[in-house]
Image 1 (cartoon, helix red, strand yellow):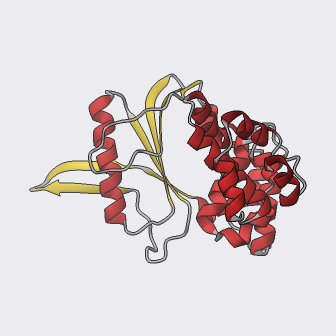
Image 2 (image 1 turned 180 degrees about the horizontal axis):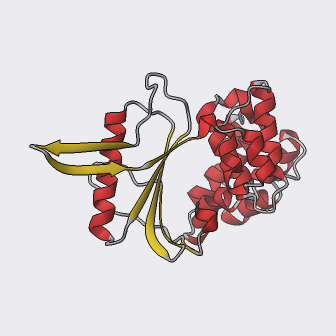
Length: 259
């Protein structure tokens, strides 16, 4: 739906919702001469219709409190629920013959979609979510590799990052880590953002953590003496390591830099 909109305001919107987690996606949309608030929730662990409806209704109430515009809510269910056969997106309430409320939100069951059809249609924005879609003809390993392959050549590397994040929600680290290409992942702004934020704030500790993270991903568990030497390095040395992180052939090659 959003792809057909004339205007989408993507500024990040946060609302104060006591004792509730932050909404997944909230934006203003202009479409077919109609302006409205679009709220999307992504759910991987659907427990019950009652629990989800209460949560969506509370979100609706708080959005309405802050914005006097029509609200279009979408619940995107990523994984097939174990104990709920019929996912509902509406309910009606009446008391003493008075219709008190009719409440609806759209339900999208990602796990029922055909991942190959998304490729045929070229809906790039949905590529990361293909991880959760049907893959009856593939093995689990082939499915992971294919989903990564579909996004690795896209100009915007954030799609690769988001695909990896989706894979993390479904599989244990040992099942997917060997298929992830670090050189592509590290080009994503979503991946770089925490480190770049640390640079701006002058956080040496943040740089140390980033160096340790990158080296561990490349070479596996690091010896304690190597970690100790990294923690003693100055900011300039840490920056040099990060710039050349992909140039080190192995851990022994990296040790030459810190000795």
